[in-house]
Amino acid sequence: MKKIAIFPGSFDPFTKGHEDIVKRGLTLFDEIIVAIGHNTKKDNRYFNINLIIRKIEECFVRYENISVITYDELTASLAKKYKAKYLLRGLRNTTDFEYENSISQINKHLNLELESVFLITSPEYAYISSSIIREVHNYGGDISDYLPYSTKDL
Ligand code: ADP
Image (cartoon, rainbow, N blue to C red; front, side, top):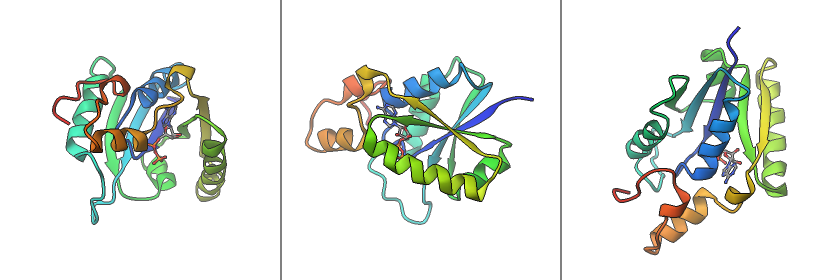
């Protein structure tokens, strides 16, 4: 049976750290669905969601087994819908661990078949976070080193 993983996140924006987790995830899974959590009723994102979807698709244009979707429901339910038995997540530090630990327990409780799989960040991307990138961009700084696509139209 095909091993399908969901890589859920806000991806506001999708970074080189995220791209690295997806590419490394392909050594474990047959198919990866990048799932952007998005509350359709209140759009409180910094970067335009459609633009980010396009940028992620550009990154993986050569990979037939990577797709991008948005969702507005429990990640555990989304996984059932897509017959995905795995949630892929990245870990940078102990703060990530604390958060991921409780989230994965809840997800397991909501969907017993779901296993969360964690990849430790590659050291060169360990300092990259979407929130810091938003901060730099907001004050007019250059964010091109942190994102795996052209940032001219962001
Ligand atoms: P969320 O809002 O769910 O935390 P993010 O978009 O911030 O979503 O991140 C999605 C996943 O990617 C999380 O598991 C997060 O820990 C991981 N991640 C974020 N940045 C990096 C990075 N630089 N290296 C490795 N993993 C990362």
